[in-house]
Length: 123
Image 1 (cartoon, helix red, strand yellow):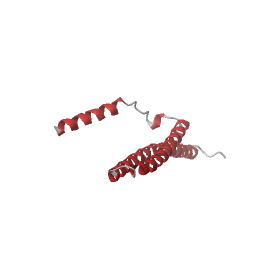
Image 2 (cartoon, rainbow, N blue to C red; image 1 turned 90 degrees about the vertical axis):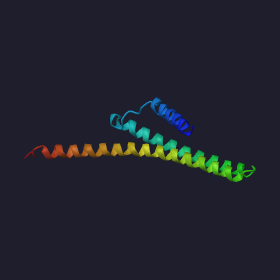
Image 3 (spheres, helix red, strand yellow; image 1 turned 60 degrees about the horizontal axis):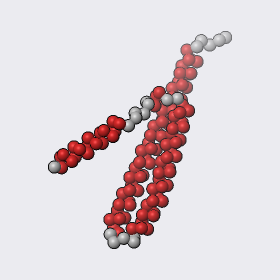
Image 4 (cartoon, rainbow, N blue to C red; image 1 turned 135 degrees about the vertical axis):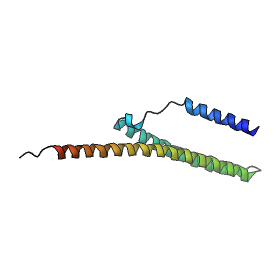
């Protein structure tokens, strides 16, 4: 029975992952688009962290009014960890975009240097 449930969960997750619109590769995007997306992802991550802190503080206060305080606090802490993990994923995506921008900048400088070096010196 556990195997069937596990299989059903895995199939559901796979269908959700497949149904998402694929992101275009970072190499196909221009610099301004990458910069804008990176900034937006950083903002989303910050907002998610702030909302998580606010909700965690509110949940802690409400947990003390319940009978099963420990399990309520554990659930609130787990929810906060999940939000932090989601924010870290967003930051990771933003940093990947920033790395791609830096890679492009270095490649452009290297190409410029190679072109200048290959060009004959004019007397």
